[in-house]
Length: 215
Ligand SMILES: [Zn+2]
Image (cartoon, rainbow, N blue to C red; front, top):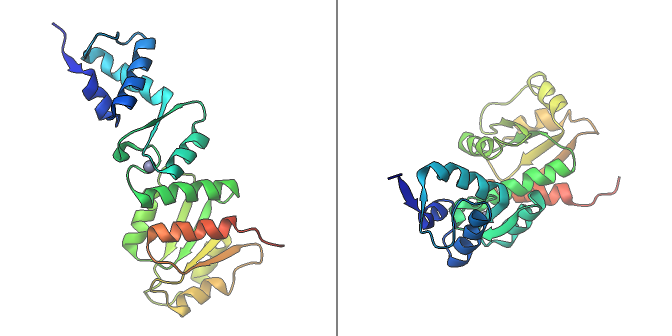
């Protein structure tokens, strides 16, 4: 006899845990001939196809309104389903990740992909890199707690960046930041964020990027 697993477990592994979500997903599997209404189990050989089908047709998010909205904008052709937060296609259960997703969209909307960040700690920089690993956003970071930077060191980074973010609430020596800000060309967007923490940084950049400004 072929190896099988319970359909309920297959769905739960995808984050679909409520009876409503499981019923909707089951209907999808039935429509594509991967199971029938009376079956409780599914053959292992069909599991990969079933998972691919669910991914292709459903947008699974947590019940956060922002996640649902962003998922609808990102995958308009997929059916919305509420799943376990850890399986949310937007946040994966992390408000920090949710903020990062919104920031990536906000930057994409204004055509910014090269960001130079002054301030923040190396662990925070590592977190940011991980959050934007799949995005077309290149991030250069400057640890503001170390020695002063020369204008010559700062120049190529300033020339490269489309957006200069001064993270003012973090350890950031004036002698470090001034090497960058003093030679920022008029065409470079420079914004200051005074909030602490990676999530607040993302939210602060979004607020500035989306703020209507007179030119
Ligand atoms: Zn979410």
